[in-house]
Amino acid sequence: MTFFELWVVGIGGFLGAIARFSFSRFINKKFTFRIPIATATINLLGSFLLGLLISSGLNNNSILFLGTGFMGAFTTFSTFKLEGVQLYLNKRKKEFFIYNLISYGGGILLALIGSEIGKYLF
Image 1: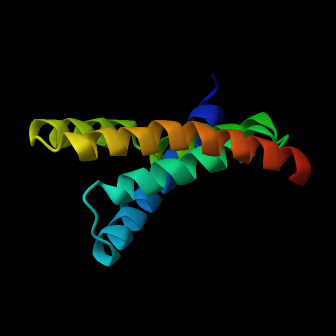
Image 2: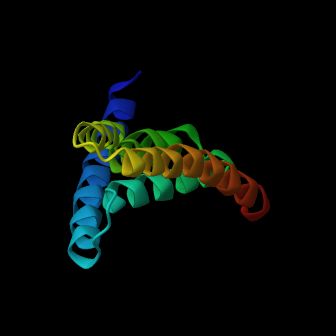
Image 3: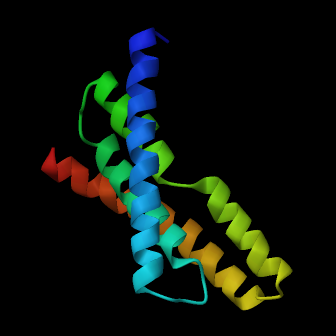
C-alpha cells in the first residue's frame, strides 16, 4: 500500500466518522425506539451504498476513499455489537433478536439490492 492510498483511506475515514456521528445524533434526537435505531439505520444505509459501490466500476482510489475509508468509518460494527450485548444483558431479548435480524438480514438484503441496482445505473 502506498502513502497516497493510506492518505485516501484516512481522509475518507475521517469524513465517514463525522458523517456517522452527525447522522446518529440527528436520528437519536428525532426518533425513539426500543432498539438502537440510529446504528441500525446507518448500517443498513451503509450496506446498500456499499452494494451500489461494488457495481459502480469506480477506480481503485475511489473505492479506497468511498468504500474502505468513508463507508468503513460510517458503518459501525463495534457499536452494533456493543448495543446488541447491552440489550441482551438488560434482559431485552426480544429487542436483541429483532435488532440482530434487522441488522444482519436487512444488511445483507440491502447490499444485494444495492449491487443489483448499481448494475443498471453504472
